[in-house]
Image (cartoon, rainbow, N blue to C red; front, side, top):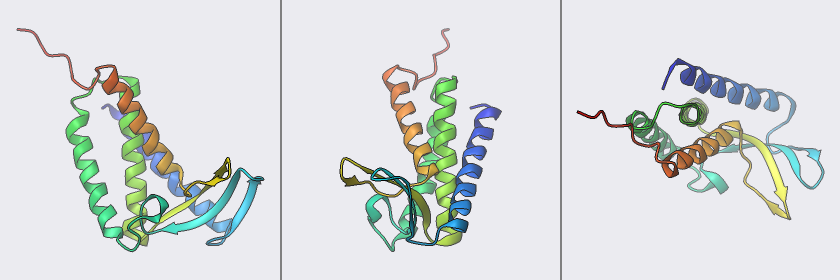
Length: 156
C-alpha cells in the first residue's frame, strides 16, 4: 500500500463519521424519513450487534473481531500486488473497519442510517463504513480470482 491508500482510508473514516453525525442532528433515534417511497429511507438506529442485530449487547465481540481483522489485513496486504484496485480494496476495508470500531469504542454501538426496502424485504439498516467494507471484500475477491494475491517472486 502507498500513501494514497492511507489517505483514502482516512477519508472514508471521515465521510462515514460526518455522515452519521449530520444525520443524527436532523433525525432522532428510531425516526425514519422517506427519501424514495417504498424503497429508500433515512432511519437512525444504534446497533450494538452485527447485521440484523446478531449478538446484540455483545459489542466487545465486535471490537475484538475488528482488531483481529485489522491485524490480519495488515499481515495479508503485503502479499497482494500493489495496484489501484487492491489499494482501494484495502483502503475501503481499513476505513470502514476503523470507523465502525470508533463508534463501538467511543459510543458502545454503531450508528446506522441507510435503510432500504427492496421487493418487500426490509434490509438491515447500515452506514457508509459498511458499504466500504463490502466494496473492499468484493475487490479483494476479484484480486484473488485474478491471481493478484501473491507478489511476483524474484527469480534467481
